Image (cartoon, rainbow over all chains, first blue to last red; front, side, top):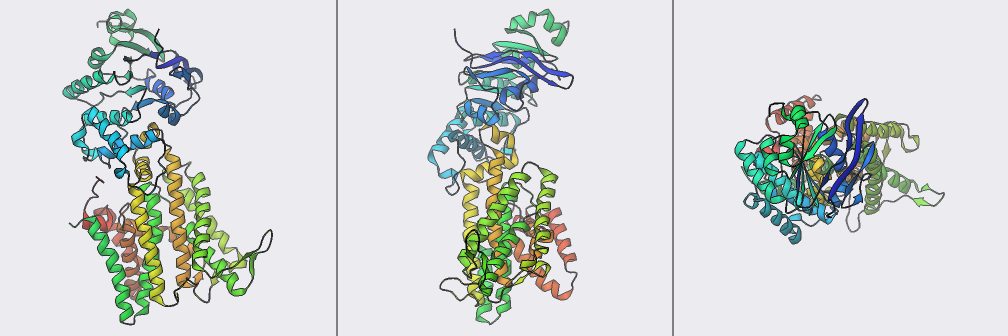
Length: 249
Length: 327
């Protein structure tokens, strides 16, 4: 049987009396989009922070490619292959699109300690960046200032930055947030094709996008996963309807 | 609007032309003023690497300026009194050689910047400003109480230090040394800003989370920038002490830190020649308005207010427009 690329085992994290994640075990297989849904305050952000290394779990472990990475920090996990995108775009807005992607390429070689040679004169970094931009369809925007990009294009740029690092798994925090219907549709198509590049753990509120994309969905409520299954299984789950989608859904 | 690169060239040509004109017209004081502006510019170019590229609002850069100054003062003082700096555990003698003094100034400022940076970079925002200010003041009060080197009165150096092959007592020669160093540091700054390091540092200022997720450490990038910045400001301090042939605790004062920052704000934060323009304008105001009134800082304050309110890119931004994203 295929091994999961990314897995959590019985993750627990509490803040005082509040149990933010309670015994969470999820996995992500090659070529898959695994969506995590849940109402506000369900613990999705805490879960992502633990997977990406921003928060240490109280108990449980995180595995990437079968290796325990629980005690490593964000930097190490990024180098090991977790490509993260943020709910609110974390990009260098004053820089060009190309510069943002070049940052990923610099991260990929693992050393920014080159002080005198212009980064744009480095052929290998440039070609890596150009390749990533082409894959997300932003090749014509290389010289555009990032702050001038549309919201959807910024999402694509975040993915391009992650692509330069050759990620083994994407962890995406609400990529559809702030997008209109058209933008959401475009990005859905884009993410659908991206799963071949690396599997995606998708935390998302946009149910249309989730139902269109996800191979499996885990439903998180009050820090617990109450159900994991295919789209149809989730849609027909009584527990999910009661807890999240509403009794009449 | 003219291109920033053209403006930078014009500024440097003008900065060179004025003392040359003064030399041919026997105006040594004008050359000294220009040298003062060049040294202030150098100190501010140093801070601009931390502030402009790294977003580190340091209000303690006078610490490095003063360390550079005292490095010069202490070494030259022992050379002129023929006494060793220390005898145990090994003998260190004073020196009048500028290159040696610069090296000592840069190394000691670099070490200080490393130690201050390691502690200060644990904080951010207003706390970073306050902790760097506190370090600067620690050095200030230490120098006041350091009686062996003049305490509050400072140290007087009778003759300017030596540079191989040049008579440094001739004002235009010392200007030439300082101007050459400024041009080299500006070149270094320009290369640094476009290097992989500069790219990552600039991103660390704008989106540290992003830098982390590509596997780079924003804190380490900022620390290296802070050290480079401190080294350059320390070198400026050594030159400033040599210009005045005098070093005193005022070089460590928080007003000095503020002035270095004012050069940058006036000229343009993160603009290559912003600190140069700012320092030149400051020295001109100090000279011309200072002659009219001892309260000339009022006019400086008004100018600063206008720049902050209406020209966020400083005077360089006002003339050359919004910085073009590097393509």
